[in-house]
Image (cartoon, rainbow, N blue to C red; front, top):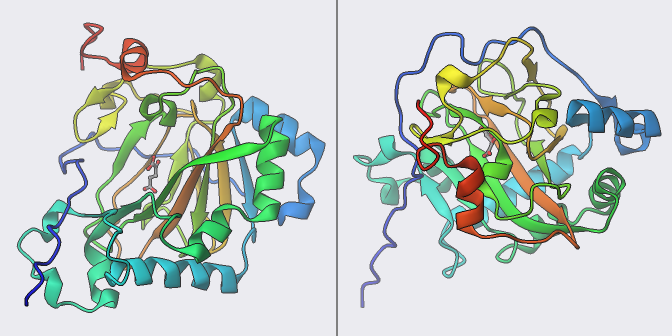
Length: 288
Ligand SMILES: O=C(O)CCC(=O)C(=O)O
């Protein structure tokens, strides 16, 4: 009996032109060295600036374990897992014939994997990570989204500027955070995070479906933007209203990352209608 290969899923973002300089920044920012170095002053600054960087948050061994977990899922060994989304540019490529090592260079993202790999689940519930998130949000964190974002060499598209809160059905006042963990060295050339410090304090802005669910390119104010290069194992924690995006990977180097989102246990959930009433540019008659 032959078993049909699972249908390939594509990320629903599109490639496309964007204004030159969209991901330009005024400089780079760095962080504290290790979880133990985070002081109350850093926590206070997180609330003002909307982000906190912890270099060397995870060891080389933990990074390798995370990659092993992703490779295991990509190999198809866990039949029930269908969370891999490929770059549309892979449409004409017979990826079924490729090794896992080769296949990863066509993947845009992995979604919702913690229930399918214990190694990744453990990383998402790393005691030091959870303790820091709890310090930042003031309550026991609940993991509600797991992603791995691979920006393949020369193929990885940009992730347009957006606010993560525009994707979530969670009350806006809730202290929701994203934790972005570099599995490779992330640089400006291969598509590290670019953020607008303090932008979370200005509240929600309308989003449009263009290359992605995003802030209109012409509404982006990157005059104070900074880039966040990270070594493998480095961590960027950011508030869900912080404006951020990533440029394409025009380099020959991989840029793989994990991203976990946590909400406070008590955060009230909302609906798609309520979310779009705040963020849905088109429905609100805004122009892009
Ligand atoms: O890792 C990336 O390229 C973008 C991550 C991000 O901002 C997101 O997926 O919301």
